[in-house]
Figure 1: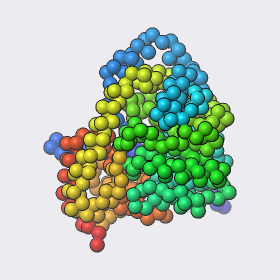
Figure 2: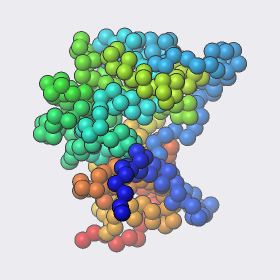
Figure 3: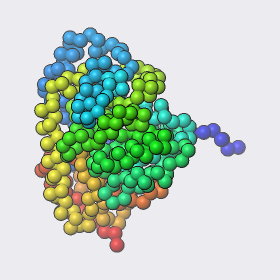
Figure 4: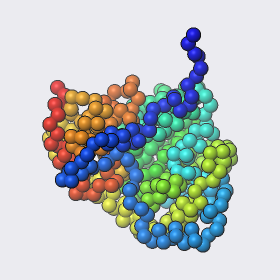
Length: 399
């Protein structure tokens, strides 16, 4: 007799893509004259700058509260700092009680979904999507509705409107985008905001990479709306800005009522965000603006290096679909799926990157020919070396 038992929540989704890709390295050696170029993960590998390390050491040694439980919604001083900074940079009015600090931006997303969705509800994600968003939707029993983006990787609010049903609870946008790198125009974000407000659903905007946006000034005007919190939920990560990945500090900006609901979830999974990491983030916001500007300039130079080196690949049939923040998203020309291609690169070119199939549902075409390059940890020379290796591949092309 066959069992009708439902799958456990974790069995409803796929394995973590970055961890899966790391397993491709097992048993593979890379010669000294061709070391591995790892462009698989969108995270800085260097520690925080020395001045922040000194500050963290002082926090550890002199602040007893940093080793104790704190408030579920985060350190009050950090919530106030984010509110003030966001109010200034976006030209809006954000209060401290509209900000929650979370254990990384992934937890902020999970928290937002927990306040919005019940079993069988729907969330619209533009594709290619950030795979952890899809994974959480799966495990929460939420149906992911993919929104194709087409040329330029910019989603269209009119296309999204056609996908909204009575089970839709939110549309999720990531800008600058992961995996595509593209920066969504302000009018695109405004169009989605107006659509979501009109249809009574939430707009979740993940701005993890806002500190590396190439534009000057506010990337959108959504916070200038005095009633922004009836629709908008903004997510952020301190990991990329201050190299605090291991400390797990993120933020969610939303209505007071929504944060009260999120508090229930946060209290049961972490009790409070990392206390040392929160204090480090606060110190960074108050003291590292000039250093962060230098980090941004370096990332923008690496982005420019992608464009400068792209002719090497274009001559071989490659296409650059999107580029910005930490990412270049490309279409490869070879007669194999991107999943097979990515695995072959490890041994045959000493390159670890992620295939587009990790960012796309199988029913949407495109993932089989696409790859993501996360260039945050390779400088301009490293970009050139990477593109040289990709340009010299002997694989057969598609016909």
